[in-house]
Image (cartoon, rainbow over all chains, first blue to last red):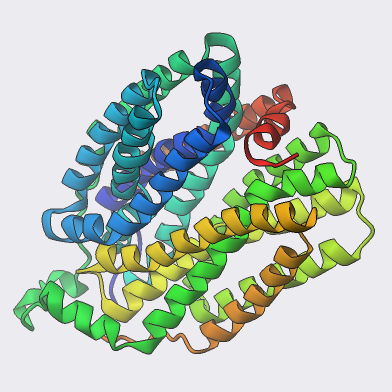
Length: 404
Length: 44
């Protein structure tokens, strides 16, 4: 029986990837805080900053498979190091951006590229590659939880910095923090797991990128998995962006909304870790079915129960637990389907659908509110998407299409 | 488990606990976060 315990290099790699994800996703999560001060200083409408953020999300999603393919070919270490340098450069340029064009270049293009190199698909694939298959999901869960923690801690700390030192100085400090990603990338050097330490390459010739893409294209469960991740992106961004507005519509104050956001952030850490741990013990598609189903039930309960601070807080706890817990499970399924050689690229393709869902969740929420003055239709659509999420994962399996 | 691995685990657990406590404290100190997001993203 092979040893499933985390090796020493893997533990160092896990710590390194955890810090990288916490920094990368944490700083990214706080970008929204710069909208008001930057728009105010340069006399922009909110559309200027919003367009740059929308560009960033689309570029991030669109280049993710390509960045993933680079990580598969040249190693995560070099891709993450370059991504960290780009991220630093993008933040420094953002700090001196005084026009819409510069903002689109820094926030949209450079930071979009940098995020594709320093976020989930590349980092989770790196730890997934080095972990024993039985512990892969747990390893991904630990790294994902760190990303969630980064989001939780960076939001209030960035606001405090922004209020005490101003937006430009806050960006400079963020750039210094992000620069640590470059040396941390050198922790990503644990060797890929091979059964009994025998190179898999000895047993069979490796597939080319083109061959694996054809296999993935013809594997229906891969597309169902991608469709499921669309639901995740849609719901998370709709609730994350528009729930504050929904609470204001119903007469709640800022404190209730802040506690809601904090509860989502805090329980997201617990949820991602637990999902990774459960994914190592139970069927990941079934867990995802349960997860999307629970999201639907939570939304129905939230809408039907009389709205009070306690139903809002309970909704925050439940949605926090279900927030990014899809990430280690979804990436774990991709690893089981196609092995680890092209994991970053294939996870990147699935992630692209997540970003498309995010785009529509953010945008359609606003459209619905502008047209009707409420969010009723988009809430209903979110419930239907939960049902859709349950259904599509019924057709997902973890069967090995490609063996490592 | 070697002593160094046990030490690393204890150190990691302590660091996580400390960071969590700091993060919760930071949230308590910034109740205005919600206003920021609301101003930024919501059409109200």
